Image (cartoon, rainbow over all chains, first blue to last red; front, side, top):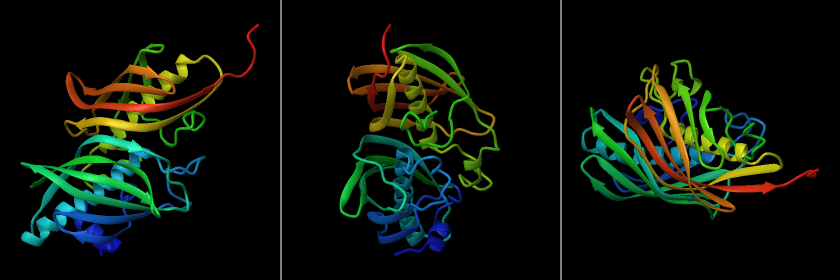
Length: 142
Length: 142
């Protein structure tokens, strides 16, 4: 469990590009479940009510970043690091999330090679899977 | 324009079309400046274009190509699948980003694309993705 204040201590992302509100489950270095609320005045809702699909990818990547950063902080609290989105594989979009919905973001580390980490990732609204696939992050100490 | 095409993203992520062959390929570019609103949060004091927005630039170029391919009618495009994306290097203010997108295969209603984002001669990102293209003819032929 991690509130937004703690997320901001571990991730460098800020408005308008912090796309996870809360972490509801966290196993550092393994997996996490995050939450993104979609509400009325967000910048990406202009003339429509859909959460843009590429931002689902970004939200999931940020939760993946938390999984890796939490592990690095656990091992060495003053550690500084840089995580970047490295890739996406076989990612399928089933439907859009819309204003008023809470998006659950699930990621689980499946593979790591040097400083590249691959996650199985899925986005759900309530129990319905709206998108899923694999994402890859690069993550290294600075 | 993109709202009318069913694609939810509030910002146009290319500046100009350089080359377009209907039904086949498109080349566009975007200049990156430190004033882009999303760079304020990605990251404070360290502006790097979010990889997903590079992907969005390729997707928008593809949608523009689809729209130019049909001369009239009602068109709705949605991102269905991201088969593979690799973000190869960070993109910074001052860069000129050139998107080249080709139709790989057309299996109506799904169009499969292949895209590159280049800075000068250097590949910044590569992607394979699919759009669901819903086209309905309106009006009469005279």
